[in-house]
Length: 347
Image (cartoon, rainbow, N blue to C red):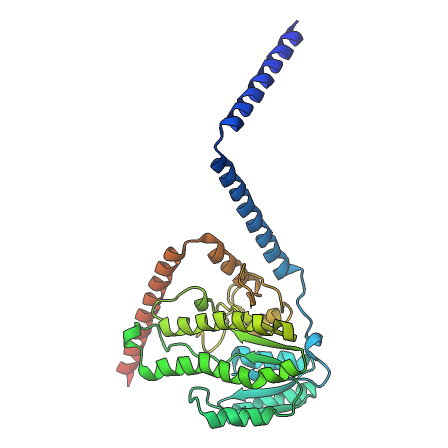
């Protein structure tokens, strides 16, 4: 008897639920269903992007350097090659079997790095002393002559410059403003224009443009620098699409902080790698987006940088990020000014 009652109650409950759902479905406006479908689609796409991010920074391997001529007497051209990330690119590409063209300002440093590379990896080197801040046509002509006849497979546009300290745009020293534009933008354009025809001719090549989070996250008090890096992002994407059919791979490497003289950071952490660790992540993940979700021809390869980039891309809190970045740069500026005051008093 009790079981019969329970069965009746269950039957009545199921009939009631079915009737309710049917009634709601029939009364639900079309736009509500459309929004529900849109929401499910967006959620699905976001999930797929996050899964791709995970696999990009953990399991998947990028395009092999052998595709671009590693170990076959091919040359790699690297700008800003005597310190930090640029120097590390030179050593890791030499280890992979590339001959190296080093382009940087200090002839003394160039000679030292070239000697180290030749003795350690038994490869050939060429050096070109060039002050990228000068924008001198004769210097670029000399670089073009230096690489004439070389079988070049890789170009790393690494040379870059930031502000001495965060500064309001109207107070930016004119020489600093000019140098940032000349080094970060014009030098990249001129060197690429010298090397690219060789890559197109061999129908195979790699161009890595070293970018910055400042190119995707506008940074108040670093307005000129952040603008120059935004230029690199757009230009890389345009160039990448232009030359893809010609066999040339172009990629902007989106970089957060790395231990270097430019970042003024000396101690590594999970978020701030050493140059060797960072460059290794770049060269093993060529062609993978990593944290650069939905940005073509762009890669954020280092795992912690990739996570930060993905969060910033997916959060949508652009105004909040802008406010926080401004606040952080104000604090950095105040500390830098106080340090400058202390040093002035000591003199």
